[in-house]
Length: 380
Ligand SMILES: C[S@@+](CC[C@H](N)C(=O)[O-])C[C@H]1O[C@@H](n2cnc3c(N)ncnc32)[C@H](O)[C@@H]1O
Image (tube, rainbow, N blue to C red):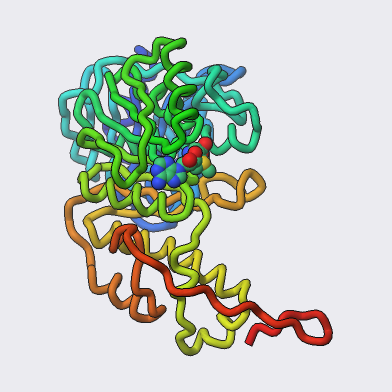
């Protein structure tokens, strides 16, 4: 039997599920344990409507679906026992519960969200014509969009937010984010250096009358853009990811989400500090460390600039080995710039594109390795 606690929000939740005014549920301030937050939304399954609960762990999300009838008892069991705070969004009011104190706020939205369907793999986006045909890419876009929509709820965006997708390619993700935000009057801009991709994406946007969606040719570092509320990038090559982060920071974008691609800038700079030197003498280990250091510095740079950052694997590695996602929400409280300097100093890194810009000539590559008589490369 779940223990019943004094939780006045449970009755509000039951009422909102019954009369169709439910918008969302967010549990935060965990009392202990690993789960940082639980986010609830309505979902339609074959067996009827459920409350879909996303359990947010430090590096992953786990989803559980709860029959609506069980939701109030579940909430009573969670707050204040495992979470101290809960927010119930309804179309009439937003209710904030902290411990046992319930406060009413104006509703964030007066429109109930569409109850999404569980298409098992492709839950958020349905089957739009702009989605990629390849299942792995499709999975990436779907998960990215799902995470984007969760994080967007945490941002205090204006009514018509402006979002840029940097290095958007054919625009799969740009279309997806526009699709998620189209009812909010959002302006979504895809930035791409290849003009033929920009032309094709604009043509498709016109065909489907996608108001608020546009694709512009140019480079991430220099293209002219309005003030951004959010910035995203999926597999923007090499330092294009850094250019994107840098533009997001400069613009004070509230939300920055990048999933990096290849890494080239740090590898030739990476020193061999003790006691790592004998390990880094192995080329593969040095390459992996360079990738780790590149992304590590991206995280530290964002934190130093006043962002709360999470690094997660956004899809399983079978869908792409480039499955790291760095998601950052601006808090405005600057972090510790000394950590960035210490990290660079430790690895002997002189230049990182997020911190120092793109205008830099890397040192000459390492000399070619020789091969030993038994066919193994001599790496030391
Ligand atoms: C690997 S593709 C990814 C495309 C898209 N984001 C996706 O995941 O489907 C990288 C794209 O970024 C573009 N790109 C790379 N560097 C860029 C830059 N500095 N400015 C603008 N676009 C860039 C490339 O032309 C390419 O289309």
